[in-house]
Length: 370
Image (cartoon, rainbow, N blue to C red; front, side, top):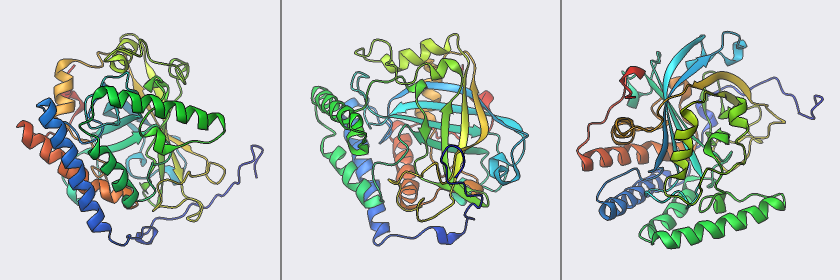
């Protein structure tokens, strides 16, 4: 152990196809997940007369960012997108979890998608000829479902209650927040409860996680986006401004970026032990004692209009974010990620078709409106 009590292991598990194991009945489960998410999108679209994403429908911050890869990375970390020093333009989309547009006073888990633009290298077959790399994060370090079958159960419940009134959803959110706070005081956490209610914390103070693993060139691991500038760390655990207002999350992000520059570390936690750090069970916390997270890049955002009308249409209506928009070197791993492949593609195609919008995959950050 080192001085911090970490179990130091220098050997990272090398990537091979054998790190994944297909689950019994997986194809059928994925088909059911896809159909359920589409059903949610159809219900919401009919109610709102506008089709949105099946999950993470409401955006709160649409940012033009820079991803800066350090020239000082150790050899092990020079993989895929991070093989060479340099900088990339990127789109950051802050969102919340539900598949419908709710008032922000119904506080739910926070999400973040990053689309890095101008990437070179071998892409996955579904993303051939593109120059983008997407990373999908949530503010929970584990996925609320261990496997795809569990995920199907949770979204089936969401589908069943998609037409509930906003008042009822507020009650569920408040009860879930109270229950979660009680568990955390007892030293425990419940990803299930956090799926229904979340403390009204400021999204810019959160740490974000891929939760499920992805390939990292010769190795594989999970990514974390960690706030490091003092103006971000000061927001940890803080509430958004005017938490009972309809767009308080968006308004708080917009107000922040009128004057502030923000910096995050992008870190990777590489697998050192498949037993302790499984690929197929996304509900298991990967213990930092076995493999501390290592910084691979910095993400910087300078003052800007974080939510213009033109930007909302471009990002929310025309772009899609999918972990399978990826270099082969960063292929998503595990059955939760495999489920996302078909479900996300189908959701995006349905949404763009229903709204008569052209699906765009940018080739330059300069395409992003101000």
